[in-house]
Image 1 (cartoon, rainbow, N blue to C red):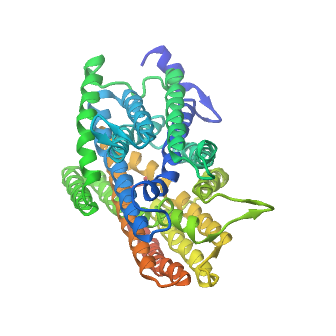
Image 2: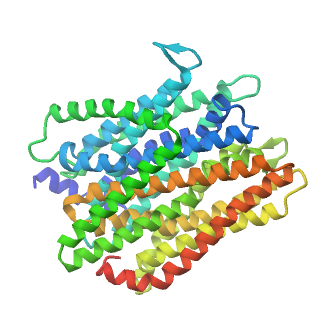
Length: 510
């Protein structure tokens, strides 16, 4: 290692590697880009391309499109991780992914018209395709790079991932508010023009790349290209590959969502089979660690099926079924509810970061599988909270705002038990030679969960559309949310009971 690399490796801020905070701010602005767009996406699709927001049929179609998009966003992470491992290195893959994402955001803001034979909807969905390609390059690799800042067994690793997770959620917290306000300011006749919200999200991505580029020197030798892959040639090759892949992604978005589902299910199954085949060739300790990882990948998929109702069914619920928080003459815009989970994570993230370390010092830190079980319990109980509100809904089918706040509070605590711990777990359980690929597998499991979340949201919209009155429509949501209660609580209890057995497979990883 060079003297400069040694100095960078020794540099710390608040007890953590200084490089963590470079990645913190880069990820903050990338998440501003993604969550600012996500907060507006389903509402814009329903309004612009599928009838109106008031139509349950349009809502169901928008929910399916949204589910397919969010699934593919995470699905391409498997390729991004492999590209970083074998071709570009983490740093260059992150920058290239950010540029693809920014371009995609700006394509979303095209107005109605004809563009070289393509209409607005086609250009819009091609912009989504560019976002998917870019996110696949960016997202798994910045998370993997965080893990590489810490040596194996470093007790700061979980705390570092929780700090990094706060960066994600600061971006996610401010994005819906800023993007909605900018869209409202640029709108007319009292209606927001969501296209300008997408433009602001794209500007956020460019700012993230500036943060990353200016301070990469503090990363030392972490994330550099593999030996023999330096130079511009590999960059040009991957850029061309991304431009070739984007039309294929567009075709997937244009297909019926069931086709995307079959592809995702097959991909997830293939990854699990591949990981099992790798595990069988490893010595006993690494083999059992991989088996534990495979089980937790499946559980992760199910968790996000419930949790990711936030940007879909719960987004429409806030827009149409919620009595808003009102202060004087001001009422909270429905889009701002997309910030609540992130705000709560920023508030509670430091508490959980401290809690895991404090419990570890006392020998009482729950093992990773038990934390997964607690996450599932929280997911189920959060839907129980909103169902209490639905049970007391007015005759007009309106639910008081504080029940949705209660759901987001419980879901936030559940997420903090599972998601940052899960990111850290991947970097611990995966063989060092394939960290990027296994991190991509983690995001494939999230992708499959997001697709299933779209199915659940579509079911809620369909059932609401079949109801004859306003109260029946909100009760239809409650019926679908009940499935999530049973699933979350049931799996949570089962995982907690089995956590000691699963933990044995992990051979000291915690």
